Image (cartoon, rainbow, N blue to C red; front, side):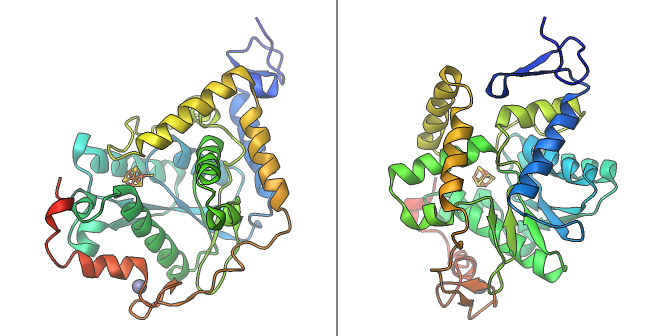
Length: 306
Ligand code: Q46
Ligand code: ZN
């Protein structure tokens, strides 16, 4: 039996990518230290920043919220109730977030799409070929608006290393230069866009899951029923296979990508102006979110009805 790298007790956990054994009692402190290092390394925020954590009820975002609280940051949560009825996904995830906010003793802001837009993703999906891209537009819009309106200084999301590597791989395959130039763990504030950070970016999905389990976080086990395309699932599976054969290779890949961008300003090439309707920053006259609001006033076109 291997020994815990900290307390020398027998381990239950072995992280091949770090060649490190840890017992369940020492694991949470190790994970929190890793996240603290990421925050420091990328200068994500200072102790007096007011952080808004975007939570979905899943293991990554709830783990992030707990880590930030334990590290002593002032971090409230924000949950967008998407109106996804399959497996009671939205109801269950909302309850998990509310219970978790109570446990942490922090504030949770809830945005309900039914109230805001008169419909949720179950209906909005009929207007778009890619449900997740419509959903992403909505979430980004409310995250930015709430952050600025409520006086927060930064938005933190629970994207982990696996998410980031999959995105990087997809961007490389498609040679999406615009996305590649903006992919970084911190996007500074600019012209009405709040600063965005990803403090779990150096930790794998498995590490976040172990943190949630070893620190008693009650999260929703089901994935969103609209969850990601077949292509990105297959990228993730194949990248995981690579990680199995070469432990640590994904972290190496991502770290070197970020290093190649160090000190290069993010998104300097993008010119933003206030949306002519809502005032949120956009590259077009009318922002994507306002265009969506216009679109859903009419019945969906037949080809999009599923
Ligand atoms: S919540 Fe929304 Fe995700 Fe569900 S519909 Fe797609 S984008 S998968 S993170
Ligand atoms: Zn707008």
